[in-house]
Image 1: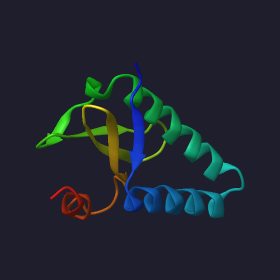
Image 2: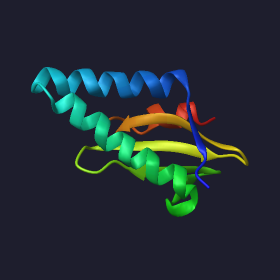
Image 3: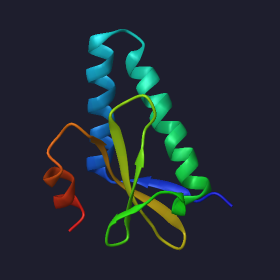
Image 4: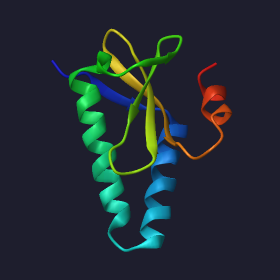
Length: 99
């Protein structure tokens, strides 16, 4: 059974920023970015443990085609997304969210 995905406000902002950045580069590319993120979220929802644990109980799923990762934690009832992280940024940025 698939688990519900819950975004933190910071993760929602990350996703929005990625969308607007890609959309500013080429019309429609932002939509493709969101589609790739959604496909990754669907995989996480169906099988949250498929991706590697990177810190404590937090896991990272790599978004296909774009240099982004989704950082999340599985609970008994849902999956909490803490970041939709641009992999080209300083990794300390996402580590601060997982404290």
